[in-house]
Amino acid sequence: MLAAELKKITKVYPGGIVANYEVDFDLRKGEVHALLGENGAGKTTLMKILSGCLKPTSGFIYVEGERVEFRSPSDALRKGIGMVHQHLTLIPTMSVLENLRLGLVGQRFDMRRMLTEVEDLSRTLGFKVRLDSPVYALSVGERQRVEILRLLLSKARILIFDEPTSMLCGPEIDRFLALLKSLSYKGYSIVLITHKIREAMHVSDRITVMRMGRVVATLDKDEVRDESYLVELMVGERLVPAVANARPSHSKEALLTVKNLVVNDDRGLCKVKGVSFELYAGEVLGVAGVEGNGQKELVEAIAGLRRPVYGEIIFERKNSYSGRMNYIPAERMELGVAPTLSVAVNSVLRRFDDEEFVERGNFLNFSKMNEFAKRVVSFMNVRTPSLKTPVKYLSGGNIQKIIVGREILTPSEVLIAEQPTAGLDAKSAYQVRKALSELASKGVGILLVSSDLDEILELSDRIAVISDGKIVKIFEKEEADPVMIGSYMLAGEGLGHNVRATVSTD
Ligand SMILES: Nc1ncnc2c1ncn2[C@@H]1O[C@H](COP(=O)(O)OP(=O)(O)OP(=O)(O)O)[C@@H](O)[C@H]1O
Ligand SMILES: [Mg+2]
Image 1 (cartoon, rainbow, N blue to C red):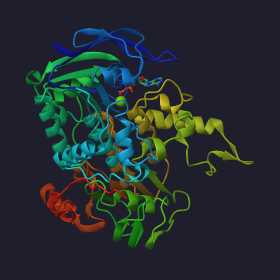
Image 2 (cartoon, rainbow, N blue to C red):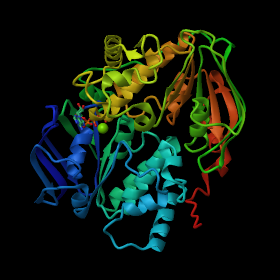
Image 3 (cartoon, rainbow, N blue to C red):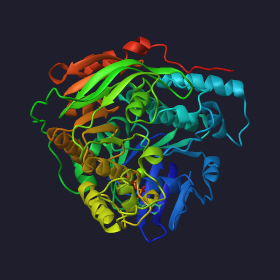
Image 4 (cartoon, helix red, strand yellow):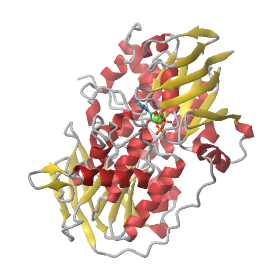
């Protein structure tokens, strides 16, 4: 019997956007079913319908052969369906533990049992979770882990993950995928939305590809000839050679100097423990590390969002016109965009003091703003109904494209790029890497923080490995290899053993 089935699902959003059109989708018991497709293809919409977050405009939902109608996510949870969302849904001011508990509302609750389960799960997954920490103090990757834990703790038997690995790093991804596999052997049925084709090939039994609101194909894994075949199905054309990394060698002119930097997190714990480095003009300096090792606090200090306890950050504007430091934050919805404002306004966000867009008397020049927004939209191929559309109505990847486009097209001397391609489809991610590489050739210094080691290796001239708040090694491009980097990444973690949930009861 099928675990769940969607028949002829059509979803028209207010405003007339057809996000799903007559979609058929089925989920077998005990399978991992990957859902692939370009940004804006309709994946999230379809799974929100299956998990009761959205009502279809027309079409039918069956769970274990029985026709159902959901009025809310908790309706769906009662039928055993739960979802981890692309944009996280935790409550920032509450602790991790409280958030986990919230996921279990309506079930009989036993704190002791929950703590044991959390600890077991964290151990299996190799996640470190600070249960007493407020969620706002966690990095995006850490929040993602909490969401995953929360779903696994609920009694759902159909588990839907919307891009769960986009902010996790290599070893964490492997453990997570292994867990998915073992859950499926235990009879859980799993939908995995992802842009990582290799990941889909690795873990899934079947793969469904969507394009422009429709299902293009559902394939058994064995039918998939190779990765490029899937890409072709997704975007309707053959893609892309790897980024040619033929940048001239960078200069030794330091644009940004960080000296003995010490930074605390929101709880006053020291997360950056004396970091020094220089970022040169025209280079990409990659920062590799397991999430939670101080990257977040380091970047926030440099971006001016967090006051360091000690040390210096020296950024001398060399060029008065482009003398800016631009920032692509990992926290898209909180720091990257103002979700209720339009695509146009979001394209010039943080430039309200820029002569280019502000006229005398401090009025925003709308035609200039729209002109620039058009450039962002066409440069990144953003799929949006209009420039006036509030950003929150776009798909996750399209929101990311606006942030990246804005920060790349706004002249700067230094660009801090935190997880720049997380959530982007293969084609868009390729475009972004290419654009970053071109930007560096023009002399911009780029600090690239990414959980994707392949991306770091592809783009970086030098690679700094951060572990337990310290830069433990800086590799030159030629000497960098993934295994070495991996071992330095885990250096501060006792090589990855003893990773467990820390339970504090004060
Ligand atoms: N709340 C909303 N209101 C109006 N339109 C929406 C809303 N949410 C999504 N859309 C539109 O529906 C289409 C499908 O979006 P959806 O989020 O399902 O795509 P997706 O496949 O998950 O993309 P991504 O890979 O970028 O996350 C997009 O064109 C998007 O602009
Ligand atoms: Mg989505």
